[in-house]
Amino acid sequence: MKKVLVFIFVALSFQAVWAENSILSLHIIGNSVIAEVANTPQARQQGLMHRKHLGANRGMLFVFPEPGLHAMWMKDTPLHLSIAFLDERGVIINIADMTPFSEKPHYASAPAKFALEMPTGWFNKRGIHSGMKVEGLSPAPPGQ
Image (cartoon, rainbow, N blue to C red; front, side, top):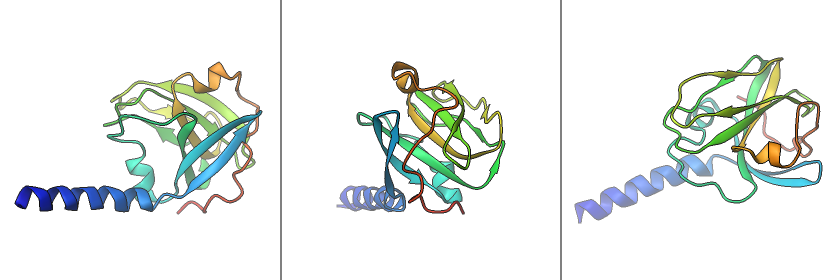
């Protein structure tokens, strides 16, 4: 009985963390993305940690309170991910491939307001690169 109650508590705790994240439909040169939104310090810190799978065309959009030379890393993240840093207008500044479980930081090369994590190679396979615009960011909640 105790094991069942512990499992239920843990499951509800994870559900509460993910329920905080809203979902946005984004578009990049005809490619659709369903992105979970991480706009609070807690959600940004959690990111995709401990996740073992992302569905097709799914990722996470990080929303920062202010544009800056933000850095991202892969602590406790088993997924293979690429990250695109975006300016305030949604224009891609730079894209980097990240290594699972690595604490090596990857920085925006210019002030970024957003970062979009997708499976490694997702951007490259679709010909998406710096200078292209991500559409659909306007309904994103503000960064806290």
